[in-house]
Length: 138
Ligand code: FES
Image 1 (cartoon, rainbow, N blue to C red):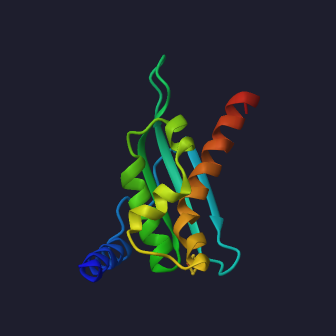
Image 2: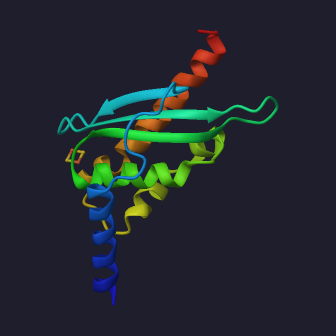
């Protein structure tokens, strides 16, 4: 039974890798950041358009990613974009890397954990950069 479940998750990973969701670049993004996995050089860039209603906390209206890399990094970023759309930035910041890894549904070797969280780390850094700019008024 376990075996079949894992197969299903592997298929889902390959589907996200071959047909990435929310792939590309958002027009006039509020948040934009890119980084790579220093171990392999694989890259992910993320752009985000926010919903900034006057008195509401900003939420993610649209998010896209691009880059190049292994199936795990690209599929995980694709899944992440589906997961966070509509979320408040403050809730995204509270997310734990375990939640992102869990999306993949398969056990990962320690070396592959960096692949799985690359997109999330890029999004997190982009949010911090955006909030820093807001504070400093740049
Ligand atoms: Fe480079 Fe996975 S091998 S991010």
